[in-house]
Length: 452
Image (cartoon, rainbow, N blue to C red; front, side, top):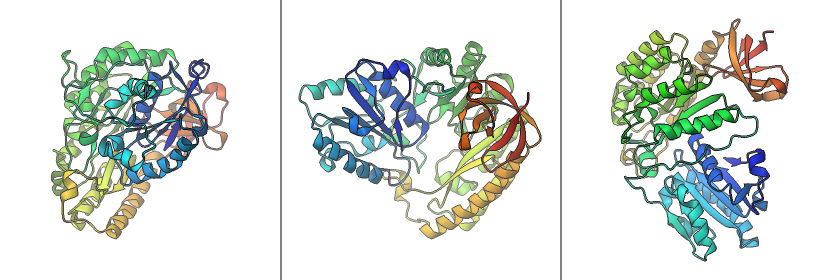
């Protein structure tokens, strides 16, 4: 959970009398959405780091993980006390939990003024006008098939930020049996490529040098657009227009990882040598039950092609343990996949039931203690693999982009392969590309020295 405060002169020196505080749950896409909310309200509100000082508080929620709704109610329990002491305070909930629960939130928290889903967040300025006219309990959680993502100027990065995110599409058509996304973010909608290029151009003009494209399934980009640009085509347009940047993307669905997209890792100079490719399970039986539309063998074939095209590529993944019906044999197949692929990092989670999904109706649940043991063992194996994978950089010189201050006052930098490097150096190096000698590897980072 993060509070959005951007130390940017353009925001903080505005003469707007109203103060906005945004609290964000969840993923990078939610953080991006919070920035877009701030951008939409910039003419009338300035950001404040303290909820107690705010005239408007917006909680932007995520429902991917279990208990997100409970966390929201706990937070609102604290915030509604501010509302009671300051009746003029406006309080709203946005995002996936808002979409999922809808108007029921008003019954649980009468102090709430408005509720908007991921599509409805673009109506917040109009909702505030309606609240000023005396309307109460306004909700916008309708998911429409003809929804288009409106253009908004690029969210202003924090002062000195060299990395930024750009949403290129939202929603999902895959309906994996465990996933709530299609029900709370709607079907896939892509932004026009010119809007994306314009936003990247604004970010580059503000000093951003590393751009990550966001979407529930970026590989599906282009569906429904009249311009005939698919995801590889978008990457090529960005590469041609902004050859000076580092380009990344997430998240990528294995079933839609085409040979053309794989080839981009060998052909585009801007595209960094890193791919997050969620496999979720190493068992074909479980993958079929998850409705993932690929097999273990097909996933391994794509990994092999990636490494042929780009031998230095870093591959990371997501894994779910304890999916309903997962047997010990299924679990062992996931462990063997870890050993075979040797991911640099794997983000692993115990299966978390999401109401409304197909998997929530499956009867053969895995006991919680079994899920916990399986997760612990998997993480132990992956931590060792990750340390060995990071160890391949020890004694080598890598180009890094210095991003800012990290742990212990050291500089934090990033390789093209998305490895964090901690090193000594002054703040004047932030934003610069440097060559760094890697002295040693840790489980999730590297330690290096600048090569002069």
